[in-house]
Image (tube, rainbow, N blue to C red; front, side, top):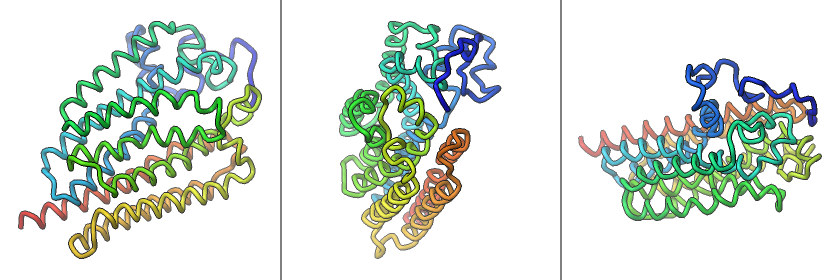
Length: 331
């Protein structure tokens, strides 16, 4: 995949070149909101999933570990789901605002709203503020410690777009930002930050290193031409070995987080169910790694999309564990 010069490679109807055909944003009858929704990647929900999943992991794990309030859990999950959509949108808008000149040089991204001129930088900044303020209003419904932790998340979000300019590990910075919910969800349910949440957070960072390295191979050639750094370029033909290390680290850290949160003496059945789900996530990563061809951008994209299924496997395991724990506590 190389840099593409012809002007007609940019869709003239506002669509983004690599958008899924027939997505809900493109089908909207109203034209005015489309550039802003595309700027927020509302037409591709995978990022919202990947932001929400660590929140759900930690909220559910905290509920099982602390015999939490079911109503609090449900509300925290609702806030995390809506907040993930909004903050992913704000983060993507911020990323595109800082990268608009670079995106104009890459075949896959030159048709995005900012480099294609559909949205001005001033409009993009206002759109960031709108999304962030609505997300902040939702955050204020949680406990004080969760609010402070949510505000602190703005720092890694602000730094991430610049990471690929000064380090070969921008995927690590993305992991720090995208898995903040592993801390927030736990604190929102339990009221305080504990070691299981911190270990879960570290496991989520390695999970992100895995899936975003796969993702970054789509743009490896363009990134090399314009000087953008990534773990895809760093590892190159050694990518499969690096992915194996990330896979092992993810599974070990998530296993440790579960064992810390759910001691076998008091949570034997819940721990067993959750650990099976952790290993199911690990198998899904192995499945991706076994099929990966780093020279096939379309396959990289499809494997990246499949990442959410591994995360959902762990969510389902934790839901079952939460039901078991709640049932045992009221019986």
